[in-house]
Length: 204
Image (cartoon, rainbow, N blue to C red; front, side, top):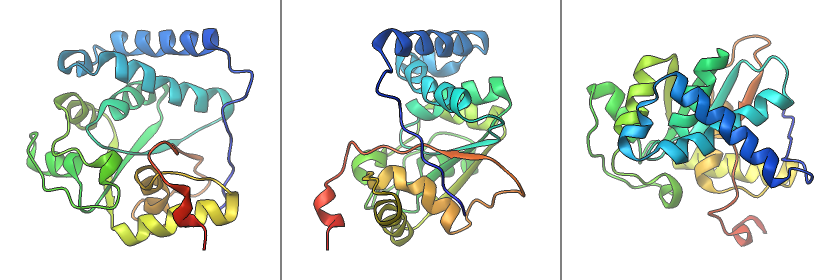
């Protein structure tokens, strides 16, 4: 699997970010996003700008892979992805699978949380908005175990010198373990974040 990393450019000024958030908010309104009904509206609109950056940077993007917690970021990205015809793969740890369980049950429900990625993905239930988007669009939900998450996080450090939280490494883990299997010539983006992490455990 070939990996190409792009980062938000240093000249990314606040007005540019506001412009993207406006585009994302309009997409959410145009699609009558249910996120606004559960308090995720501003969060989802802001998160939707992540995919707008991918669209601007990667021509012909087919699929976006992201980790799912309570569903605020997921709802925004799913709305924008639906607008652009981009497939979404939502990934979760096996020990914190709120979206996966809700999809299986057809309703939001509480789940037990026991995962190394619980600091960022440890929501006991996914939002109704996230479930609605997952059911209404072509979203695939996959789960991976903690060992795969740890390996993916270390791989990002050793190969690319990227420090990410365990939660966002869940997306790469889904690809590395083939829990999510790319199609031939599929162009895939993976959302990564390094906020909730301690880089000291990456140093031998």
